[in-house]
Image (cartoon, rainbow, N blue to C red):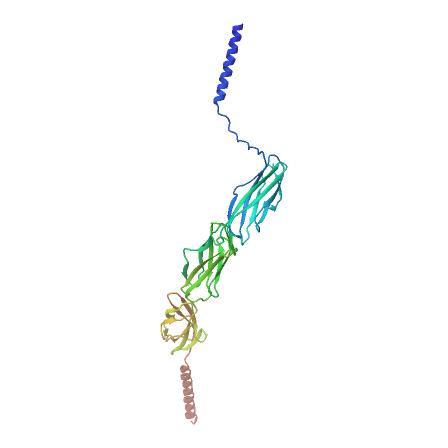
Amino acid sequence: MRLRSSRRIGAIASAVLALSLLTGAMPATAQSPAPAPVSALVVTTTYPSIEVDPGGEATFPLSVLSPVAERVDLAISSAPEGFRTTIRGGGSIVGSVFTGAAEAPELELRVDVPDGAAAGSYTVVLGATAASGSAELAVDLLVSDSSAGSVALTTDFPALRGDSTATFQFTLRLSNDTSQELTFGLSGAGAEGWDVQVRPTGQEQAATAIVGAGESQNVRVTVTPARFAAAGQYPVRVIADAGDGRQGSADLLVELTGSYAATLGGADGRLNTSVTAGSSQTYSVLVTNTGTAPLTEVALSATPPSGWTIAFETETVAEIPVGQSVTVPVTITPAANAVAGDYVITMRARTAQVDESIQVRTTVETSQTWGFIGIGLIVLVLAGLALVFRRFGRR
């Protein structure tokens, strides 16, 4: 009996030993370490030293930890003269914070540097007081030389060329090589009557551009020439002004090749004439250059009815300057068998750039000669009858 008990005890001991060895060989389940509790009140910031320009602003994110959930009062212990400091949380200026919430409150210390601050290092001390104790946080502001850093407007294509009816678009890069975010007012100027629009890319209505420190942003410039602007080169100036003496500018150039346009009409304003059958009539056309570039080698032609002859005094005008007109006489001769009525003649003025045409209504009238001949024949017939009646009447 004792032997059986000893064997059972040994078996149990072996099982326990094997289980313990197996358990020790298995890896422990990974667990996230619990945050270590703080033993005292602590105020920290991620970036305790920030570079800023005179007239600029520095923002320090704050973290407040305490050993117990409690109210912590915050105040500025010391700050340089003229520097404005505020503690902000939840979109408001705050003077205290409650610790121990599930999520840490978002706090920040904002320091406004005066415009006339000299270059150098300045320290602001934030104090925190609670039932568990007190703490301080010192942050440094490295005020840079006001002349340090620069802004610039640049483009790879400062000159564009095209017709005076076209709209020209430039893409510029606005670079802020300073230590602070800047807000730029954008403006542009061109020749009298020209429209120059300067906008941040993708912003149709914005008149300003916000560019972070050390960053850049594209700016689009849209230039619309004045109506009837003559061919030539026109400068356009674009300015990005940060309002603190920092200014970037770019000089652009638009070259207009001129626009080509013409009108064709009657010299006396009429688009109709008349001609007597069997004769010719002179009609004058007026060609006017209404574009902004000279018209050269203006060819004149006509499409008359069948059998008619149209002869221009000159079939090619060498040049018509901008805003001027040329009158060209045209001889119209209807066909010999043309009957009385209205006919349409198409006249055209054509260059390599323009093609204008008009339709002139031409009325063919019967010649008066045949009327006189008919009257003469009637008179002769009447005279002959009178002679016959006189001679045979006496008998």
